Length: 189
Image (cartoon, rainbow, N blue to C red; front, side, top):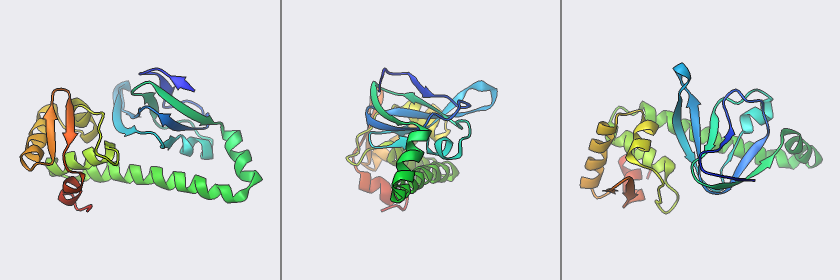
């Protein structure tokens, strides 16, 4: 399926509709917040799959998924997923891998939010949204929302990372200069 930028794939509270894989483009995962607003929690890249929890348990969606760019997605309905795995029981292992990957993302988000040092928290969030080459599609405002910090605090943290040669700030974007350096800073090298 092809979706334009800003199109909801699904919203928190929706009935399960299966799992979605990103072929190309980016998607945003938003957690519901008190008062009806939503908080940016993660940015998914091609190869990522979402919706596994609702598809497996048959419960309503716990978060919203919205396209960040024009995107092409694959969709497997809950019944298709179950049929594929029932036909060849060994396929459940791939579903387990998907669940483990998404659990790892959730743990990374929690770990980043628990870091009291704002420079380290910012570095963890940069690592979470960058691809393997360090390419980002994120603004300083996005980083502030991901890290649950003010825009001014993020700017200061990015300045500290820039002084260390790990990032370069540009208008409306951040460039990672050293993925390895960011990983070393937060103990993930």
